[in-house]
Image 1 (cartoon, rainbow, N blue to C red):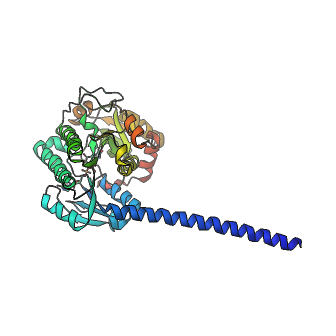
Image 2: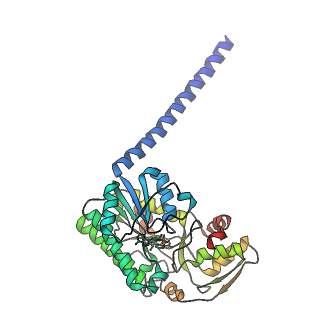
Amino acid sequence: MHHKRYCEGIERHQKVYFIIDLFRISMKSLYSLQIYIEVYAMGKILVVGAAGQIGTELVLALEKEYGKSNVIASDVKPLPTEALKESTYISLDIMDEVGLRKVVENNDIKEVYLLAALLSATAEKNPAFAWKLNMEGLFNVLNLAKDKVIDKIFWPSSIAVFGPTTPKDNTPQQTVMEPSTVYGISKQAGEQWCNYYHQNFGVDVRSIRYPGLISYTSLPGGGTTDYAVDIFYHAKKTNNYTCFLNADTALPMMYMEDAIRATIQLMKAPSSDIKIRTAYNLAGISFTPEDLAKSIELRQPGFGMKYASDFRQAIADSWPNSIDDQDARNDWGWEIRFDLNKMVHVMLDNIDPSLMD
Ligand code: NAD
């Protein structure tokens, strides 16, 4: 009698576990189905400038989110990292308007992430070409959305939209903007064009003013904040670094994983939540070269830092020290995860100095 009741108890338990498992599996399948339906309704994603510092990581993150077959990477250069060897790649020059339209139409592209641009330091060396690439590329993509060929655009802006007359600390979303670099001028104009296309043609374009981005999977592309990446290669190789900015130059920075998460979060948010159609301020970690050197020294005793500033110092001096990102927090729930020490640990653990050779 006792034994029978005991066995029935076990059976009842097993049934409950079976029902819980069934429920879990159904929820998982429902979630996958929901993603499948979302992606199917959405069409495919094209990343332009996919071989760069952001693109190499964004492509992988988008593939993880939407499936490998729904993401197409494109650039004028081949994809540089091993991790991208199975990604779909198309060689494409963003200034080739006809070629771009063909790629988009032939592949059922509905979202474009436009990363191709000349960055701040490189742009100063070739202002006319920087203006041409940064603006023409943007117009080519905006016009595809205006003509309803694509539904949604991500285009990154930068803290370079701010200038020497901008309040430097906790720089507000809306403030004086008189950029002093050709890069900043192109990003500021780009922001206004995005807003204009949204207001006048209903184009769903979304943007972030990225701070300096720090990552280890590929080399940075010629920006003023590149020292904060270069330093890790040299720290690993020689335990020394000569910085091209002065010790006390505070700049807004962010670890790449945070930037990628912000980008995908912004693109997934309902259109009605996106109140700003120029570009969102996004604060990460604000630090000086000296702060960074001290944090590296905690992990690598004896790390030596020298300073020899060059033309990039003037660019850095025109940019904010730190950023107020309340609007991004309120509108689409942005929050930072990596602080200075956490970022330094991940960088030192993962950086491969042979990438520099
Ligand atoms: P990057 O220089 O590393 O990559 C840009 C990529 O664009 C390169 O792979 C390049 O080959 C490609 N490209 C250049 N001309 C092209 C063309 N005509 N057609 C197609 N592709 C072309 O730059 P990144 O750091 O990845 O930056 C991407 C975007 O984010 C840029 O708009 C940049 O202004 C912005 N941004 C970057 C940072 C940062 O710290 N990395 C900060 C603020 C804003």
